[in-house]
Length: 408
Image (spheres, one colour):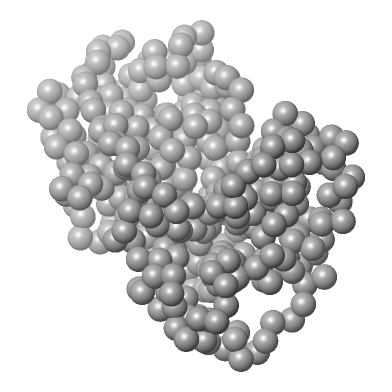
């Protein structure tokens, strides 16, 4: 069982973490006498206990979750509770001791587990990284430990693009937004949206099809900007960190660039900020949402450096630090966005609710007023029929053409 920590150390630990982020691994004199493994382990533990949206402390139950995750990483071909086969029984007495081991800096268990599970010896650095990542995954599947190593190259975003397509006598502006990006050179999704919508209007588009299929999210600050461009300066949703009050996502200075009919396309890979954008347009009755139920990832992650981020070998942790809520206050976690016009799933998608350790559903009490679309049964049937029997993109184009006639 996890032992109580010294009160004197706990009282200064937040200051030590701040100093560590600025000065690197050496830290203040209070920890200078501790081995580096102990100091690093305590920093990792404290970051998750202080920064994770649901909080929580090290205990035997968390130790068991760490144990299961670590063994499943070493033996990925089996169910988590059966990982490591016959060698598992020899390791079981560690299942509720990993919490103590982390605080004491005894990080030898992953090395032992690797020998029993795989028959090979792994390096000490790799072993510690496995244990720290098991700690992170005991909080939720999106948290992670990022071991020291060369800084990973940032993937170039796939930029938004648009074209005008004619279907059933309507000119449809098909605007594809694969991600929410904000580059160091100032280029952003919202900036590209302004330009692309202007081009579509010049080409006489009558309805806008905002295609968020496959959009896994990205920079959260782009959500209220894009919502305002399509809806006006209304609340695009809420973000709740570990402590209230919630943060309202709104961009009052952004003018609306598209006032015409709007259809939003989503699928099972639409996640995070893209889900929040779709839900904002749906809750405010601004758009008809069509496609598949979205991923249901209603959480926000932030990166915490464990040493100066200026070097090339940077240990860090990714912590789930906040939850996202629709303008109605309904949580997106596990639930996602349910389309107004649902399509049959195109492929088997592992959604958030299917992930081991995914955070539970939670709603938020808000005072904001929303007015979602109220589709008459006959119109809903017509829209569904327009999309039936066609591939995804063609179905969306036909649906958009019909929606443009309804909204004129």
